[in-house]
Image 1 (cartoon, rainbow, N blue to C red):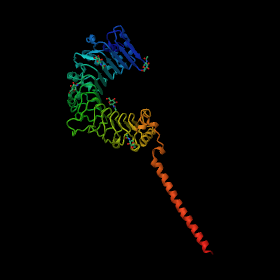
Image 2: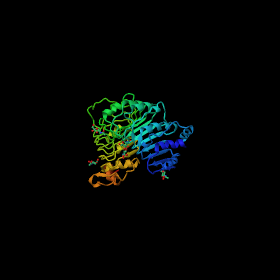
Image 3: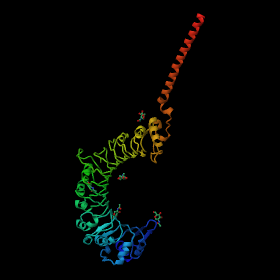
Length: 457
Ligand SMILES: *[C@@H]1O[C@H](CO)[C@@H](O)[C@H](O)[C@H]1NC(C)=O
Ligand SMILES: *[C@@H]1O[C@H](CO)[C@@H](O)[C@H](O)[C@H]1NC(C)=O
Ligand SMILES: *[C@@H]1O[C@H](CO)[C@@H](O)[C@H](O)[C@H]1NC(C)=O
Ligand SMILES: *[C@@H]1O[C@H](CO)[C@@H](O)[C@H](O)[C@H]1NC(C)=O
Ligand SMILES: *[C@@H]1O[C@H](CO)[C@@H](O)[C@H](O)[C@H]1NC(C)=O
């Protein structure tokens, strides 16, 4: 027990009168503003798999003596079931962190999260050299002095561990650069999230230099300071394993080189371009894309041809028709809510045999017969989402304005006069001809009978 408490103490001892509360069903323990009196309540957290410490100041404990542990203490650390540790609203002296980090090698903690923390001072990480840790996921959210930048020396001591890290997130922390050497340390990293930072186009090529993040599958650059689509494409060319890329919420422009020959990694399956201020579609698109999110832009037309695309999200644009679907034969999911589409032609949609989830609410539908009938047929397939029928309104013709598409009567007689009238005319025509022939025949027979009568036997 002492070892476990020592670890938790070293990390969680903070000012105030708070305590720890364990939720047994969730195996989740949250400690707030612990004081010296209430620190005993940490013991409650021992059965938890997620433990959070919020509030306070660890500075006073920077000098805490954490020497070599007794075998009994090690045994207890090994028996702890904690998998995830969260530290929030804390001042973290790096000296303390460096000393405590090695204790983690005796635990099964897989995920370490620092949220709204300020890291202070610097430390010597030599003791960590060559040491491995079970932590595979490391997250920093809204931290000051993000340990990723400017700590090259520490990086080399920690490299044994960082080499095996799978997931890293440094979000909302004003990161403006990732040195090339940093990326090269993270040899096994599969997911990197650097959303909500200040990365610019120029810094990107450096961060993803030759040999950096060789195993990266998932990359989020959401909400940074990127402007050039081709710049992003060129900077990421060397990530040969990249599958998911999010560059949403950047102000992208088609910059100087529209004929850029950049090639996206062939492995790229999903691309998020939502909220990027686009008024025309960017090219080239990754050729093997399966998921494309371009919602919340200003697109009026869309010219794409993606043979493997399965999910297309284009809600909140200004698209007027869905002719672009012709070149996406494998489409399964299509969201085009809140555009300017007036028709969903059934003839075109039924050719997309894999389509099974469609969202198309909030468009100004033309409820002339064929228009309303097409949408009603689509609804009958059961593939229109939960917004049907209440969010599908007619916009034209004027007599149907603001009526639900569902309520427009599309009976054959009303809608397709030609279809009803043409057969009737044909039938009438045939009847007329038949009548005339009969009449002629009966007249002829009468004439013959008369002639016979006149001639006599
Ligand atoms: C534990 O968490 C569950 C799910 O969030 C919640 O329903 C329950 O009320 C919590 N229990 C306690 C004791 O807070
Ligand atoms: C970010 O962290 C600071 C303290 O470092 C805190 O005052 C602020 O509220 C945090 N912001 C968010 C959005 O969490
Ligand atoms: C983004 O870039 C602009 C101009 O390049 C600069 O003025 C601004 O400070 C940058 N923003 C961030 C968050 O770095
Ligand atoms: C794309 O990013 C936005 C946030 O910018 C997010 O809301 C959306 O869910 C993402 N799309 C996909 C397909 O993950
Ligand atoms: C609505 O559709 C009908 C029939 O296709 C067409 O004649 C009419 O011009 C359309 N109205 C609008 C406003 O697009």
